[in-house]
Amino acid sequence: MLTRPWLWSVRPLCEQDLNPDPFAQFERWFRRARRSLSLEFPEAMCLSTVRPDGFPDGRLVLLKGFDHNGFVFYTNTLSSKGRSLAEQPKAALTMYWEPLQRQVRIRGTVQTVTADEADAYFASRHRSSCIGAWASLQSEPLRERAELEKRVLEFKQRFKGQPVPRPPHWSGYRLKPDEIEFWQLRASRLHDRFVYTKNEQEKWQIQRLYP
Image (cartoon, rainbow, N blue to C red; front, side):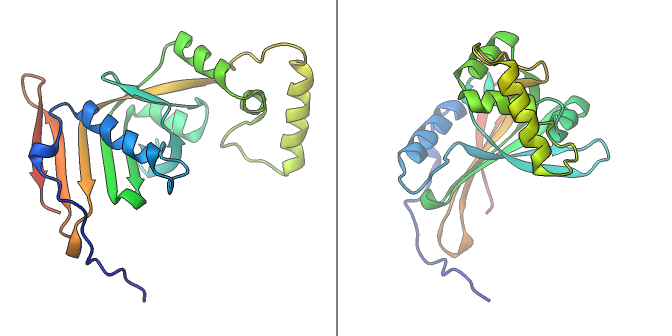
């Protein structure tokens, strides 16, 4: 059995190093992750939802924007995750940047973005991705790939010579956080963990957690 020698240590993460604003703290870490040459997709994050049958579900999505209103991603609203969010609009996001030995966990409530926001982002996508959004019946059974490729050709012909409009079943979601945790690896698995939560006055407070 292979184990990693948890003997190395990055600079300790102390509370005085953290920005009182969790969004500013996230921006600092995310900016650093995007500068890393070892991370091909620093915006990748695991979206965890609860299915209507009560089972948890997780999959990778891409962070497409964030501000003090929340963290945004886009998808097919009729997919399994879209149906889960319609039934239970609470979710969690996890981002792990292994080369930086850092992780961020975010929990909160999810709402769809405005139609204008979804239209603007969809228009910025590569044309082939826009066609794919129409062609794919995401999460539905597919007998063979040829069936999908046939649908792609059909929609290419349908929208030939014109901009591809956003499908009515394709939109974005914004997760408004109630809790944001920053984790940094330390030797012997004695990691540094700090969680931001809101107090009764709706102000963010920081607390260190046991690793």
